[in-house]
Image (spheres, rainbow, N blue to C red):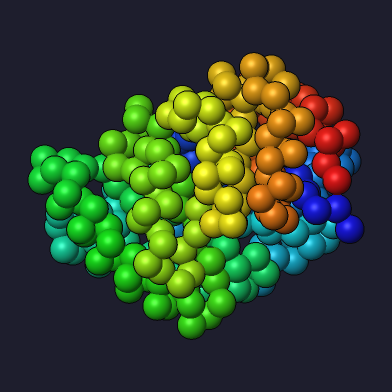
Length: 270
């Protein structure tokens, strides 16, 4: 059994408007993943209340894959749901969505939910207020997730996507009080925000519970300047065992994205 496995972020919703998730007919995407040696698929789901979990899990299993995690960013893009919103009603709806994501992660057999774009932005109220609101939301979700054995993974994002928690050190300080909240390390974001994406892995250490991979230009691993042998060495060194989930621009096609990613990463996985 390898210490690290390969996954990719896929949006089953055909109208998903996000250029770093794979889109296309599910059968074809899953078949391509399996044929290239991927073990899992990370599902970016806009609305967890619209998902037939049993059917979806059956399709993924029939393809010989696992669900590696549930991504939630499309709930922010499509509905504007934000866990740090200054509007109590928006936060309430966001929490309701995330409770359903947590339940869905159990039904799909992954037990892992990403907190990325849906954490929101600082906004006109300022970052201190946004952090307070986010912490209030996460306290509720932490209790719910912990009781169900689910891990929430907070992803530091680059400054062009949000102004709320950009660096690993900020995220680490934020998650430490919680029992079920860990970190998601994304190599693209770390390249933009950290002094070194390799050092960022060592800083996060045992708090890493999921990993997104894209090269320095957000293309497939192998098409930029990131040293992937160094990335994988450090992940193994800090004790990470789990998926490397490709979240990169599907250019010129998702098939080529997956081929290049597999060619770069598969020989390095141990």
